[in-house]
Length: 388
Image 1: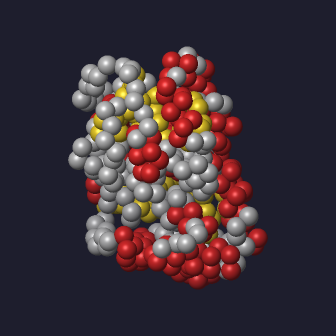
Image 2 (image 1 turned 120 degrees about the vertical axis):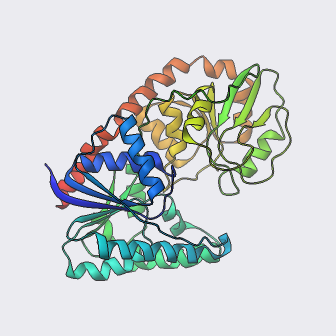
């Protein structure tokens, strides 16, 4: 059943940032609405249009509108000012460009939620907010200043207010939805929904730079920094010495790395690389490695692990909440470990791990099919039918 119109607002992303999830939700919403307006930075729109074409997706019902969201980026210590800037742009776009349509925010509009709560009392427009990792702030212990401000604000929004029934939040797994409901005001629980993090990529013909090194290749394909496993990586590198295996960092690494003969930094500029080059590197790996802290990712989905699924690369990872959820839902797609020492044991016995490759790939095929936007759009339709 088609709904009339929706406006997608994305003030956060530029170029190919978050391109997979943005592309996927654009496809899913296009399946459920008669007409759409996509409002974003020019570079982001150009990239999305290119990907739609490469995925052979018709865009007859989508109108693109580019805007220059001139964000001044403040140092991490003053991240609150970045949040305020983005919230301001989100609020402006909602007021001036959404007309009478429903509104979908690709990223959390943060401080603007309070204004939406007040404004929506005088409007019938429904607001959908896609949540990424920002909700983790709610449960942070010893939060730093900028996160502490956001934590106090989120607790007020989700735990104290009875939010307008026109505001709805979409999380990226059933587990996240049910866990988040336990943290908030019971009056707001009906407005918390979930779909699986969708995944689609056009076929990549770009050959990239060939990796000619001898031995098995294991790729770290996620961003690594102090919050995303940097200490775990250095602990791993300080303990390993392999004869027939090399670890490659494909994505960005922020921080100093322990020198190791079995480790190669492919992204030497330490900036986000083009996604075609990124995919070409992944294709050359025998497996992928993830070193997020054990027990993390309770309210965060990982696009990187789904890149492993998309490219059929078996996974070696420290066990976290999201990875455990994926393995329980779709079957084993590799090995989840409880410590760095367990990961080292797997790497030391890589042939044993790799002997189950075909079994892992069978489960990845199942997951990849379910996570396609055309299938997740059916789950989104169920949410819309319940609300509208």
